[in-house]
Image (cartoon, rainbow, N blue to C red):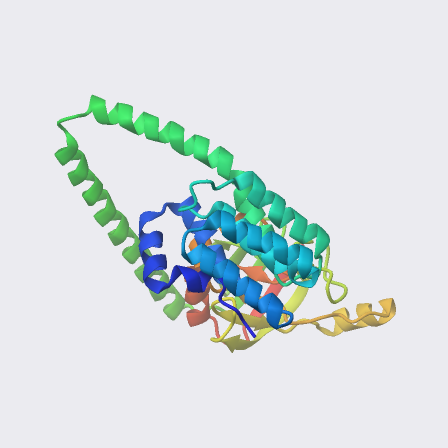
Length: 330
């Protein structure tokens, strides 16, 4: 049974107002709360979690943290959930005593002490962002100081600048619309008959009769070098495949299923005495994390699939039919 935990304490209206006021960095931290879930082990453990959530909803962050520490000592089997929610509290924007270092310690301890936890992947993602918080804070501070200096230098020209900004936004929008129209015309007049994936270049290209229609940046499996050999090796396959299914209900926004394993893959797996694995797809970003956008491609994060942004997979999903050839090169 899923327990909304801290998310329930925030409430839908409170969360909406918080998201509207926060910048990209804080938004990353708050969205992670949406992933909090899990089943209490026993009535008493559940009662303690509910009490901790009540403290949180009242703004008694220190009391909430103390309750989670008691849970870890008394109910170690549920310690991973307690550590994850403590990490969220330490990063909460309304917590005046927020401490990113302690939050990192919570997520690191969860990963170390609970390697099989359902919170592990989300904790790793939180650490990924927290490790960049200090550098980004410094960059933001420097940029804000620079902006303030420029603001003073160009005081009196705000109207002109605002006009230029609006014009740029309008031009960018028109350019984007024109680009989409050109692509749509090209894809309709020259239907996609092949998808080329170049692992080394982290590039996916739509082709029509050998001519490139459009290219995209992609992320691969966490162990990208070499062809996929067995289930669980986190490798992206290499070879010739086909799109054999589409899934609108994917937990990664949308997905196109690739016909891995082929006969060569099965033969290699038989010789190794292992299962070749499966479920290799071209998909978007995990539901709830669409705000990551283009930055998702900065790291290979899938279990062997090929990932794009949600907007990109929507485009490809629309124009690539089942049966399209997929060539995956090293």
